[in-house]
Image (cartoon, one colour):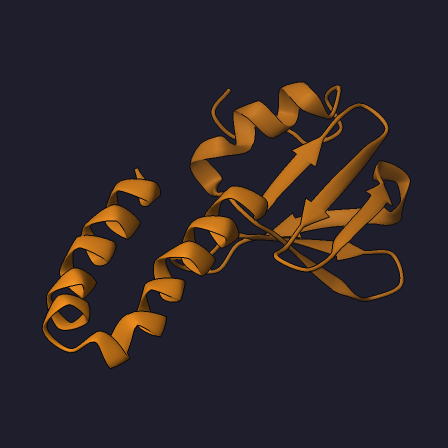
Length: 112
């Protein structure tokens, strides 16, 4: 669904680009947004959690995660054993059952 919004942004940017060709570099904005949407994700399996952002990737084993926290209207944050917090893109309270399944039960399902 986010790619649809980027598509509408690209259509909206066509008006100034076609009217004034010097604004053509503005068309890079939808490309960057689309790349960001495709790249940002959290991948979890029974051994580790991998967080991918636009320019980096980080894997953390489940043993290094002390717990999860949520802020209003925000993605989950993994609280690591060393006191650091790691933002988990695309993980919300609604997607916790999927994270429970992927973690092999290490993350409790709040909906049971």
